Amino acid sequence: MKKKLNVFTVSGLMTGPLLGSGIIFLPPLAYDKLGEHAILAWVIMMALNGLFAYVFAKMTVEVSDNRGISAIVGDTFGTRFGTLAANYLTAAVFFGPVAVALTASEFILPDAGNTPAWGIAGAVLLICAIIVISGVSFMGKFMLVLSSITAGLLLAGSGATLFQLPALTIPHSIPQPGVFGQTLLLIFWAIVGWEILGNYVEDVENPKRTIMRAMLISLTAVVMVYLLTAFAYQNSPGHFMPDLLIPVTGRFSGAVFSGLAACLCICTITTFTGGVVRQTTVRFKNAGLPEIFHHKWMTAVMLLIVDYIVLFLHAAGILSFQNIIGIANAMFIGNAVLDLACGFKLLNHILIRIGIGILLFLLLLIFLFSSGYALVLFLLITCASLIITVPIRNPVF
Image (cartoon, rainbow, N blue to C red):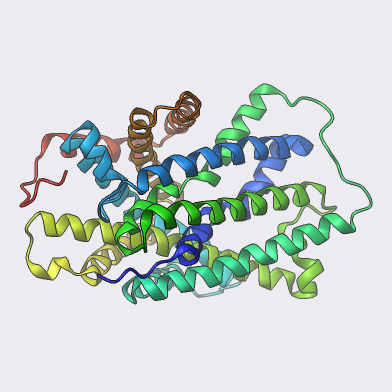
């Protein structure tokens, strides 16, 4: 099979979802809690981001196919745990894209009138599915363009905003430990997403070289955008995110900002859905299912149907937006914990292990705040994955 993702398209594929909706909502939330000390929390979180990126990039280059990191988890801890990691990620993509699509709908048509948010969200999910089905080459180029434009505008706008200010506010004291810790937990989601990289490894040219280089490019872009944007936001007079774009887009800053937010949401949905499509297709093949399930388009359609069911439950008032986010977060945490635990065992450097320990501690703290819906589904998936064994033709887990 011809490899279609190079250093730049892989980095584009990762930068968009890593920024995601987090760059829109997290800087204001961090500033509301910490004020001028918010930038200190961002510096620490971006250092952890570098560790997160390194661990998953190092593990990804050892992955043999699009099952991703779950394959290594299976090799390290046993077949059932590999299956569990894959099931957590799959379940997360049953719910996460719906929440992100609903968020995108608020930016696409903020004054939608009689147009329901679920209708716009459904259209966003369909567009993302079409992008995934269109092929990895188009998908990689599309993500590269969107993420490059977004990162470029945010960097230019934030840099110009800081340059125009008469003085900059820099922390001169130590923040309250309790509030500082709460803020770190709040903005931790800014660094989650690197684990999906392994689900594209079959489509990458020379993975051992390309993955690490793409990781460095994506990491540099993400760290620069988050730090500069967060610092510009806390120094801006109005503390209003769209205002950061005024120096480069003028009176159109609100519309441009909404467009960027919608594009980042599309990047997030597309990358995670594409990763799970690739992972699930390999699992279907290994399970000996009929050949129709060996095609990525079939898996993408199946995921879209499940997303539409979740969206219907939300529209019917059965699942709230918070329930959907809570379930997706619990599943992402479950997958990330298994992946990081695997990295802790495989990467022997003491500093890396200490960093992984910190990441695991933060993830487990966040998990303690999971909703009842999330905990019930989490336990069901955990028990079913560890108890039920699915026969496969090739023992790859």
